[in-house]
Each structure stands twice: as structure tokens, then as C-alpha cells.
Length: 79
Image (cartoon, rainbow, N blue to C red; front, side, top):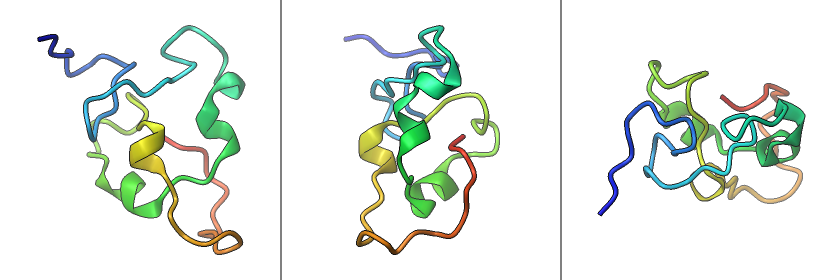
């Protein structure tokens, strides 16, 4: 069984699964899936301070389960 390295940028810091991060794949940030969605405030809060800016969360962990139109009011990009 493969165990990802804790600093592997292609791995979600919450579930340790693949995060499909475009930046980790060498693409520009604008190409990443996370730039066009609203991420869950709870998921973002669960990321440790040492992981912020180092690894992105995956779609499953970052899913915003609030009803459409009930955004957080923040326009910050994901970690």
C-alpha cells in the first residue's frame, strides 16, 4: 500500500487522498478546479496552519454543502 509523503502537494491534508491540484501538477493556479467553486468554511478551518499554502484540500473534503446562494461572503481563494 502506498503511503503519501506528508509534504506531497498532490495529496489532500484532510483525507490523504489525491487533491487534483493543478499547481501541484505544474499548471497555473487559474487552471485548478478550486478556483471556480466555493469551499466549505469548515473544511478550510480544519486545515492545520502548517498546511495552509502548502497543500490543497480535495473536492470531496472541500465540498460546500450549504444551499445555493448561502455563500460565506468571503472571496478568498482556497489554501
